[in-house]
Image (cartoon, rainbow, N blue to C red):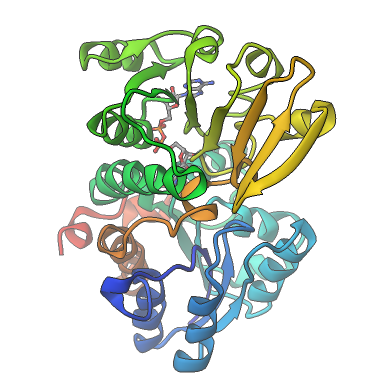
Length: 354
Ligand SMILES: NC(=O)c1ccc[n+]([C@@H]2O[C@H](COP(=O)([O-])OP(=O)(O)OC[C@H]3O[C@@H](n4cnc5c(N)ncnc54)[C@H](O)[C@@H]3O)[C@@H](O)[C@H]2O)c1
């Protein structure tokens, strides 16, 4: 079986050389798959991990940290040249590319899986439009993924990234989290645990009420923008922080995004309208607005925990990647009915529980 997969390539010390991510690919290879690997985000690759997968394990990797848009898509296309039977995606760029520019490969594909919330939303829309031509499993929907990876993984690694990029003390800071989903809850809990005064913004009234009952201040972003010191968007939505918010923010405000795509903070507006911008620390850009206030944007508004830190610790990703690896067995053991209907389904409970 040929398998194309988009992913994050990171390692941590507990795994000495390779992250859970690499280990999953090795597991799949040991199971007999031919693998081609590309990135799920231009800043998400750790080059030494990518090199180790190539040199130590003979896995084809098409990824390099910091590639531009053209390079990113050329890597996706190079991975797809393997003519995959299955695709493991993270964010849906791989599947979207297949359905838009590599349609000649579609008939070869029996199915695959999607890792993250945003990718599942994109797949659900494709399925609704009748555009998805093969079955995909929504790995993100399994409890062993979103309850742990999204919450504790994103919670910890997002705070880690803010520390690495800015070296700020969190105690006493007003910390605004946009989105109180699985990831947002994790970020808010960890920020509060380190002494920050956390404000939540939410468009879903029930989740806003949940945040309020957990003791957070809840308010619209336009209000939060006036008082916050640090802002984290983690909604999966677009333009969560935009010009109207930038113009009322305090001097020195720190802005980071932990949602999958770099569309939550309107960095393009800052690029066009700031009087001056300069990189002042590793992965931290300073934009000086017309009112003289400086806004600090981490990792260009891309996934901050991957761009400015090392992603989640492997111990929590092990759970997500085990879920991903198990999806390949659904194919092997015969189509589960939820898998074979052309919507994103959950991993069958039997496999999830192993
Ligand atoms: N950084 C990471 O490592 C990582 C890990 C997992 C998921 N993600 C990504 O993070 C994002 C969120 O994932 P999740 O699992 O928490 O999703 P979720 O659906 O559980 O939560 C998202 C929340 O954001 C709210 N929201 C939407 N638009 C908003 C807006 N304009 N203002 C305020 N709130 C708004 C929604 O109502 C929802 O409650 C997705 O893009 C996902 O792919 C990132």
